[in-house]
Image 1 (tube, rainbow, N blue to C red):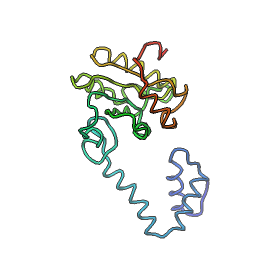
Image 2 (cartoon, rainbow, N blue to C red):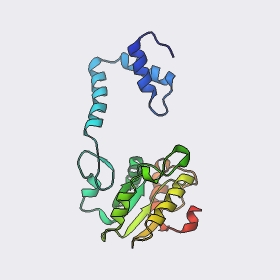
Image 3 (cartoon, helix red, strand yellow):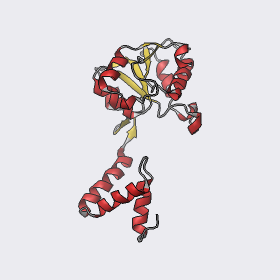
Image 4 (cartoon, rainbow, N blue to C red):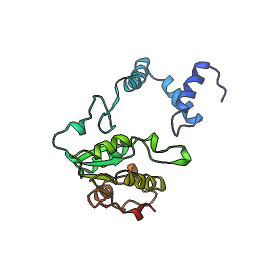
Length: 205
């Protein structure tokens, strides 16, 4: 797409670099911004600068937060003995919306996917094992998407946690095979958390 202005071209290229945004959509969005008041556009741009400047990763669970420890980890009324393992923050939001789970979380930052070049070393696994080895941790819930990659990651985590005394459970298969956790309705997801079962090797095979 050859545009008449280098500034317009640069803005469209940057907008088009976002996931799911094609060149035509990027151009439409940029042209929309051009019609807006300069102060509104400045507020829009500054919100992203503030985001990358002030957002941190929780030292305990790798959740997104503004302090060293996120609000969930620091909340005294949460069940400190249970850790729910999720792929990313979107899954935390989905589970929290069910209001059925009161424990802690651990964000892996992805799932094992050889096709995408993502291996165990690319995930937040060592910190999870360290948390599992603490006496305060009694149960780890594997709450990854019901996909081949999700099951592969579940199986890998189960093997890595085998030396600990922690009970490893998996959310109920009420979630359809191939489904992403973030798109599951709140009732189904809530029931899947509450009806979790002991992880068995054949679930990942």
